[in-house]
Structures are given as C-alpha cells and as structure tokens.
Picture 1 (tube, helix red, strand yellow):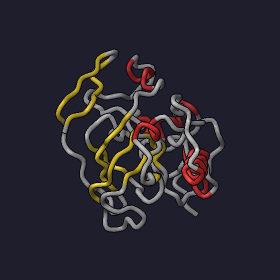
Picture 2 (cartoon, helix red, strand yellow):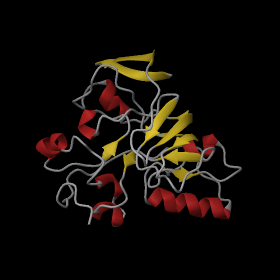
Picture 3 (cartoon, helix red, strand yellow):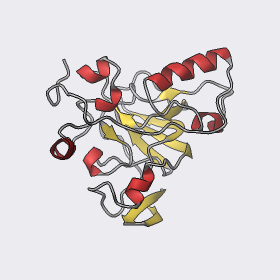
Picture 4 (tube, helix red, strand yellow):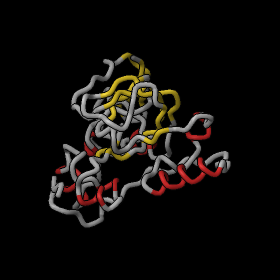
Length: 212
C-alpha cells in the first residue's frame, strides 16, 4: 500500500509500505477513505517530538471502511464505515472505565519513554512516534486498529466523509456524545475546525497496566 512516511526533519515521502495485518484477536483493518493533517503533525515534521524513526507512517485523524476483523471483535462488521479517534484505548483500565481514554494504561507498549520525560504516560496514539506506541497512522491506504470494539465510531448512513472529517469526533469521549446527538437531531456540523489532538500526560495515573 501507499502511505505518507517520515524520513527525517522536514522530510516526508509517499512510499510503498507493507499492508497491515491482524495481529491481535481484537484488531480490525480499516481501508482509509478520508484522512487529515493535524496541526500537531508539524511537531513531527519539525522533529520536536522525539523517537521518530525513518519510514514511520503518520496520521492520527482518519476514517474509512472496515475490511477485516479479528475473531474477538463483536461490535464492528466488515463494511461498516467508522471514524477512528486518535487515542488507542483498551476500554478496561481505570482510565477507560472513567471515560479518560487518552490516558489508557494498556495501549502504549513504550510507556516508560513518556514516563521518563513527563512523569506519566498517555495512551498509544496512531502515527505519533514510538514514544506514543509506534503505531502506524492513517495517512495511508489501510490501518490496523487495535481494541477495535472500543475506539471506532460507526458513521450513520447519509453522513459524508467531509462532514465527519470536520467534526469534533476525533476527540472522545465528548466527541462521541456530540456525534450521536447531532446525528440523531440532523444538526449541521461546523464547516471547518477539526478537533485538535491533545493529550494530558501530566494527569495522575493508576499503576501501569492495571485493568481492574
């Protein structure tokens, strides 16, 4: 597949990279139909965020069609249109159970890196350096989405990719609530201003990996 890759400070390139595959039983593969460049991508472009590696695939605001699901995925089906928020959340830890998905305890396999730098770690993030998990991002043709029953938001019929791309739903959980409310009411979203992808690494955390 083709994807936008980081090649070094202020160096980007569209390259052919391996197609994503199901790794865990709760993964899904999404065929990207719309993606965005967030202002915070400039931090990667200018290399203000460390732990980038040559060839990393960028992009943390994207949507598309589910084309494959792992055997444990129950909420999504092949053919569903979904928006995928930027934080990767397990849905089971203390933070997820309390709606603080961007601080998920279980989705960042490299949590020791931001903990050493900031004193705490946020969740894993799509396409946002190895400090935030090293996950390939959505400026690509396909993306592997971990914990697929938790993050992706189904898009109702009749709502275009453009309306979703310029909505606040990239930032859960408030975005999920607004998406549901505006969809039910038929409310028109603003014509611009995609939600910024910010995390709060300074928040107090439960013990690493705690799910109960």
